[in-house]
Amino acid sequence: MNIRSLTRGDGVVIGAAVLLFIASFLDVAGCDGPASFCDDAPIPNSWDATLGLSLGSYMTGVIGAALIVVTHLLPQPRKVAGLDLGTVGIVLTVATAWSMLWWTIDAENTGVGLILGLLAALALAGAAIAAPLVPALKGPLLPAPKPPAPQPYGGQPQGGYGYPGAGAGAPQPGQLGQPGQPFGGQPQQQGQPFGAQPGQPQQPQPQQAQAPQAQQPAGDFSPFWFAVPVPRPLFAEDGSPTPIAELAPGTWYLAVEQRGPSLVAQTQDGRRGVLQDTSGIQRG
Image (cartoon, rainbow, N blue to C red; front, side):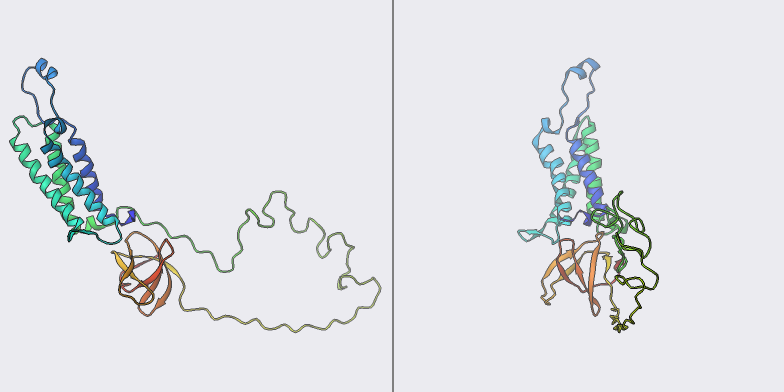
């Protein structure tokens, strides 16, 4: 499950479902009698009144919201008895809003539990229907993480554990001896090779031929981080038509190779595949 695949519409659905669940524990009716009578008479909530209201209305909407959110968390849509779980969740939220409307109309003294439950059910059903249609609700719920800053090629690591010279008491260059002087040895005369006795004539040293270093040509492609605007399938590198994963919006993936118009992408768990549709991707 990828929590970054949730949208703002899913956030509204979750908030409305929590509010609906809280409303099920509030009073479903008011009291018109004297204050002393109202203080002594218990006012039931939906769980004390009838299971048809608590389970048939309140919890139906909560279950519908859970199905919608779980469907968006899964990499592939799931079906039960040929029905998509997300579609079933939307139907349940609409049924909850319809049921809460008639419970509120039919009640003689409407309590805060029914009023709050009706408002939450209407918001839940509206968000479930409008989330796939309204652009403002289709945006990612959580911001996309920033890609890690790439290290320069050939750069030396900073001082740390195990790095020479990282410790506080590590010797600095020039502390063990003077420049050009070996540790524990005698000072060498300028231009005199190491190990030669003073006063001896210098023997000409043959110049070693320095082989030119072969420069490797730089490739045209460099790996980069990217994010997809909408969920897109990732196919196997052997060309099989069955997707091995689904790239979700709001998550950064690493492009390791380019094959024509397609990219070879690597997921967080190390799986590699071919992203055939690269239109509208965001480079990190």
